[in-house]
Length: 179
Figure 1 (spheres, one colour):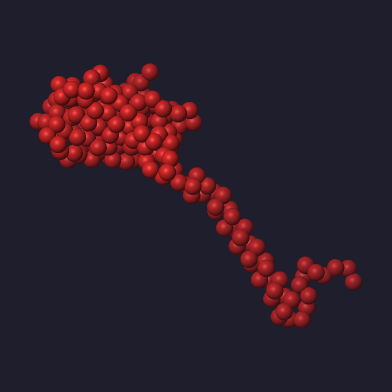
Figure 2 (cartoon, rainbow, N blue to C red):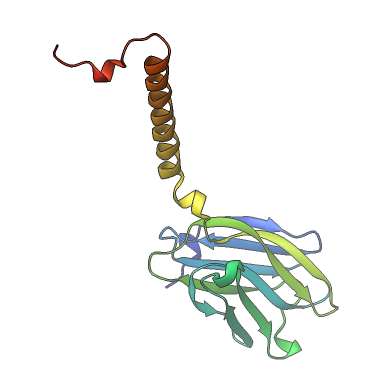
């Protein structure tokens, strides 16, 4: 179902000994991240911002939870995964894979900070590729551009009419008909 070879290669390193590799596959509907630990403290919690997620999959021994998958109320959704017992944490030199499937229709890709928490309480933010919600302006930029151009055309046309009717004593060109 998820093959690392199909995942867009993207490696991000946190400043404190954690690396996250992965992102969306070619379809943009499946995400896969491999979280690797190079720290002395085990990784016990991972959080990925997301929009439009349907199915979170955490490694064995971890619990997975989605909150606010459709970004209701303007808040970003989150895919969180945490260990069920400390023994299941990602030890130094090890890695675990986290997966997320986005609803049919998908969501645009973007970069946000994933949060990685270690057993000793430290947290590291790592920029990763995730499904994001676009703004109204992003979704309608063409329509907004055309509206501005059309509005400008109407404004210029209106100003020319006023100038023609009030300025030179001649009726506007549009009002000239057969005599």
